[in-house]
Length: 367
Ligand SMILES: NC(=O)c1ccc[n+]([C@@H]2O[C@H](COP(=O)([O-])OP(=O)(O)OC[C@H]3O[C@@H](n4cnc5c(N)ncnc54)[C@H](O)[C@@H]3O)[C@@H](O)[C@H]2O)c1
Image 1 (cartoon, protein in one colour):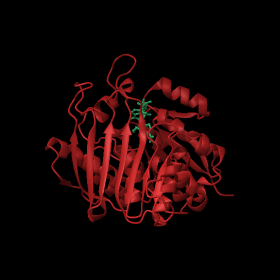
Image 2 (cartoon, helix red, strand yellow; image 1 turned 90 degrees about the vertical axis):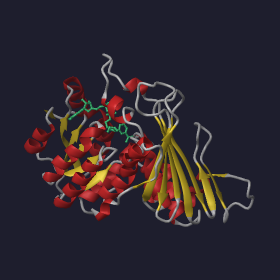
Image 3 (cartoon, helix red, strand yellow; image 1 turned 30 degrees about the horizontal axis):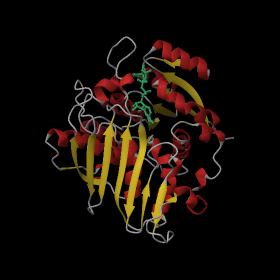
Image 4 (cartoon, helix red, strand yellow; image 1 turned 60 degrees about the vertical axis):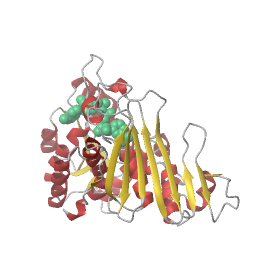
């Protein structure tokens, strides 16, 4: 019988979204958990039955020697903790974003090159059913050449900017304390997959400060990206404006069709396709194309997937990560794909500082 992969976690709060997927997987067992906050750690230990609980991450890696670790700590720990694991040849599934600076990106790439372990970034929105279906339809050519995509993440998170005691949290500093697209991957991930090319250069501008001038981030920031073949990607990030959230707004335009995602709950996702829709003014529901194009993973999803967070994304990315660790397939979001989704946001922070100047985005494959 195959030996089970021993999985450890860092950051008990977000990790809890992955516990069930790993527990349900026949080839994995959860062996240890790390969190700086003692009550959070104890509660996660109680819920999961995990006995090996740590407050020091490296100590967990060295004592438990897990096969893989899930890095689900705040963003500014992602690169350092991923590198610490990779240096020990421990496989990494890391939350978004991959890193918070260009230097960290380079260190991460170097660590991946030196390591025998797998690195994958957990960009769960790329696994949501409509996004997976649209991607399959793009790959089948029904939209023609896709030359414009758009993604919006509108999520007012001010309740999470301070603790109950009024102290600023990591989100206060790293998400809205920096101007630019600090958290772009949920929008960029699907858009880049549909566009089929990485961003070559970006420009970023914002609305100015209206809701809460205390934060460096402008209320809404727009990241415009161009690919080498001049395709256009538009990302809107807003974590401050007062409004109901809408984290999965997407648009796609190709030479033979268009896609408009649901903007308000219940409105549905819509496509128009030249080869399928005789009326040029009539949108049809995306769901009509499930029979023909829906990939296998979404045809008969298990209850764990249907109950998982973020439209099943938190389940399917775990399945792909385990498959990659077992050598069955490459990780779908490897280090370079992760940086394709992360670096435009980092460059956008310099662009917005320079009044929206177009700046090149390096291709980490060349490093
Ligand atoms: N993909 C998604 O849909 C999604 C959703 C939510 C959060 N996230 C990401 O997950 C990460 C965690 O977010 P969250 O909402 O759980 O944050 P959170 O602030 O609610 O929890 C962070 C936890 O990490 C612990 N922690 C902080 N520093 C640590 C360290 N150095 N070592 C070990 N533990 C440490 C804290 O004590 C806390 O329990 C962030 O990077 C966030 O961007 C992703």
